Length: 190
Image (cartoon, rainbow, N blue to C red; front, side, top):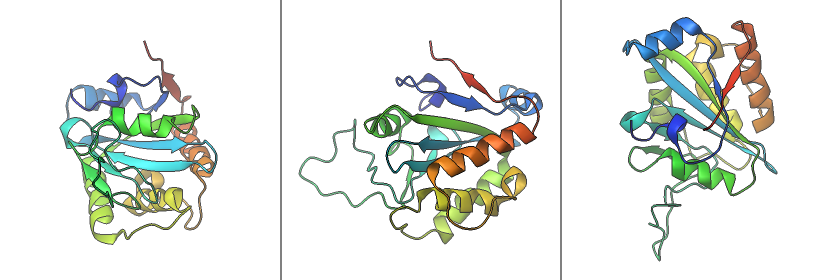
């Protein structure tokens, strides 16, 4: 699969969804479910980003970020890019290797969370991003990611409305995994 977080070139931990029934549904290619990934960068002021789906269906929401999709694509050149700051990217304008390398340039304290949600919930997230998200101001990345997750319902419905730091969002995501039962686990990189 192209554009796969589990097979990227970065040595980065992915905290997997610990629901074995949902993992089985994904493995059996049941189209009722989809993966959602939340990237948390804890370096300095930090950053949070949200990736819906995987492969060529990937959709990145990067609120209050400065990622342009050009790190490895070398498309900056002499052309000014206005992407970022709440923009979203569809494949092939976004790929995991490029995005993760961009985050790792800040430092190594970067982690990705995986959640498996009903596909209808993923669609609700995507519609919310496209139709209800404005340009995000500085220091609101985690707040905006949490808002999109909360407004989609499901396991994220209890997120508080208000400010989130990236490390606060990371703690909230770990709490969700623990409430689901079992211990979240990290996929080791080969």
